[in-house]
Amino acid sequence: MIVEGLGAWLSKIGNFSLTLLIVTTYGLLMGAFIERIIAKVQGRIGIPYRQPFINILKNFFKRTAISHGVMFYLGPVFRIAGGIGTLAFVPVIYGDEMFSNFSMAGDLFLVIYFMFFGQLGMALGAGESGHPYSAIGIARGLSQMTAYEVPFALAVISIVIQYDTLSITQIVAAQQGGWQNWTVVTNWVATLAAMLAFLGMMGYSPFDIFLAPQEIPIGPPTEFHSAYLGLMQLNRALFGATKLVLFMNLFFGGATGWLELMIKTFFIYMVAIIIGVAFPRFRVDQGIRFFFKIPTLIGIMSIVYVQMVLTS
Amino acid sequence: MFKKTLNTEDTLENSGLTDEEQQLFSNARPQAYEPYPIKAVEDFANWARANSLWILAFGTGCGAIELRPLMTARFDANRFGVAGRPTPRQSSVFVIGGYASVKTLKRIVRSYEQMQGPKFVIALGICPVNGGMYFDSYNTVNQFDQYLPVDLYITGCMPRPEVLVAGIMELQKKIKAGECDGANRYVENFDWYKTNQKKVIKNWDMPDYNW
Image (cartoon, rainbow over all chains, first blue to last red; front, side, top):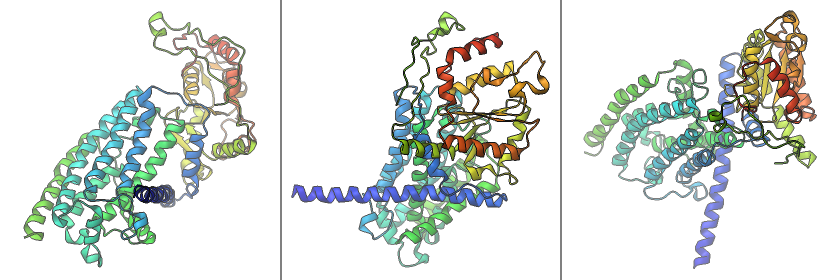
């Protein structure tokens, strides 16, 4: 009995490792693809597709790496643990036992928690580096995160009321059977609030003040180098792709195959990119005020909408 | 990882610092590193290093103006894996853009020492070679390789961005062949470089090695 249970767990972990590999590779490739699209818009050729992989390899092959203390080591580790943890509870392909990961009842809460976890670990790690720009970047990043979490949480509460479940798999299941069942159609108010929060989440312009390469040399990761930076780049690809998969699951009907996943996540990503290339950067106070005004109001409206229209 | 052993004492004097500041800075010596013992691994690492050159965004002279067009549509150095990086910790290439005044040299040394090895220096223009038009200036150094190890020279006044791109490709060839060991040369001849630096930088109020 115990051995059988162990076997099931081992195969689950094996499947998850495969998902992790695919999603990370996909995230890196999509990063390069987006870079190339932006380059084409600017009349350039852009980076080769292998560039993100080479950058990570280069960072791991660095000969020296200095440390600023224990938390400095742990910062990138916490960050990637947050990325892996988020992915672990998001079902990637609906209806496929192999790529459902550790999805269970109530995983939506866990995912939202894990999304926060990596950022906090990073804040501690970057704080110990002692660089003033890191501290400024963290202050900006965390306050912006607090701001965009509000509309996102409201949107999530809204769809939780709508589908009466906290399981992402069941939320995806409720959206099956054609595009008219997707949350974006049935509860467009919540989707709007969540997509506005998504802009802040992805860290592209106009909400990229916490990275701000011109004023505070790239913010929190200023002091991170070599293998630390390699880990963080891996996480950026993994976490970015995971967030896209989560949004696809919650609002755009999930995916039943890898091709569907790629098409849907690409278009969700393009929302952030198109707005990013079209708008200049918000100052941190403008960004936070923005999130506390319109997206928060839309988030509250989405709950009212669910209560008044959908569940009555 | 694979540290080379050096026949010198272990600590630095940090004589430029006050007693109070001595406590705040590390006095450890930098280390030289051997390549990986397996040649295939080192070749692979060199290939990765050569194809991901992150240039420190620190304009050190008039040649810095030649760095900007590299990222534009006309030259597009992104194709070769070149990218700008705003912090010395993450960058691997330092482009000395022309003349280095004594005041800038101090900052160049600080930035260079904070970069993580293997790191490469490109000297752009004629000024780092022999002083160029500033050969008799009271305020610029004439031979730059007396102060920091240079891996590649691109001469001219000023070299156009095309030449800089050609130079970067040349640097890639040298890195792939395993010939760019400036970081090791700097550590092995550390005392000589430090003496030269201290000769020109009069107000030396920083540690001997900026970790």
